[in-house]
Length: 172
Image (tube, rainbow, N blue to C red; front, side, top):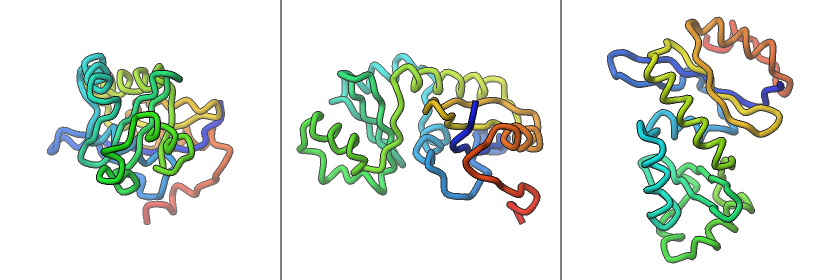
């Protein structure tokens, strides 16, 4: 496996939530926002409600758009996604904009979306101190639990091919 991009998360007990601790720009920022701010506990109900609500959902920081025809999910930051411009568009027009990346979307299969949300909920239930979100060379998003930040960094050092980071310098 080769990692194209990643984001580190830490659990903050006082806030009872995970937050990114990797403050660089990511190609996967929209997925990070989804996990931080909007990941539902009941994934099946969430997906069903998305499909019933005109094939997209709007949240505080992101939009989730479903392309049932191709079993794809588009996730975009609301800074890119202007609902006032798209509210009168058909779902097919919005999906066309997503495919053209006019809305700055992260794209994944519906199976990957379900897997990612279930894996994230498993990490939340375990209260793992750290979690790693990553995108691999096959464009599959996944998340793994870790006990320490150092373990996450070692995992990335062993797997990454697109960028090289000096982890000891990064958070100075």
